[in-house]
Amino acid sequence: MITFYWIGIIILSSLGVLAIISALRLPRLRGDQAIALASRSLRQIKRLIILVVGVTVVIVGIIMLVAPGPGLVVIPIGLGVLATEFVWAKRLLQNYKRYAQQFAARAEAHEFSRPRPALAIVVVLATLACIAAAYWLREWPIRNIMAIGGGALGLETAWCVLMIQRHRKRATAPHPPVPPPTSVTQGSHDVA
Image 1 (cartoon, rainbow, N blue to C red):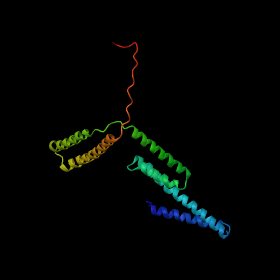
Image 2: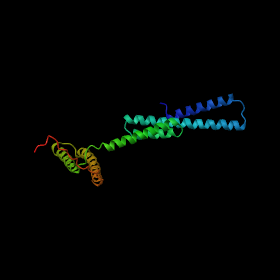
Image 3: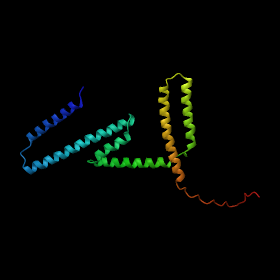
Image 4: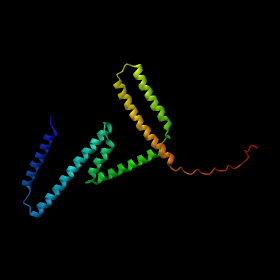
């Protein structure tokens, strides 16, 4: 099994051999020409390293979209690394940001339900009833029941806190003005 250690040694050795071969083929350079060539080479190496690191981070982010992990957070990090040297990556990152902002605005505009804090009490009581029923009606170990029930109660607690915060936010938010009622013109369809 080849490890990253050996892959790194092979890559560095190959680069060293290529540098020696290219140095033997170059004509003699003056001092300023050699400095200019070295600085261009260092810029190209820096670009290559940024390309490899950025593409690797983006690929890991894409893999995290289907595997466990924060892929939607890792992809922009990789694009940010690439955007330090490449214009196309900067454009992709700007498009990604714009899409994320549009998605957030659409999600905020489509809050489809009002928060119902009273529902939280019903859900928590139902969960406690299920835990009690599992304890008395089945012969499961108490630690298994508490592990499952405790996890469910923890998630419900977080849901309740978010719902109450949302309810308070909606209660204190200024309501849009109500338009005045429109007057209905009376026509021939009047019933006296």
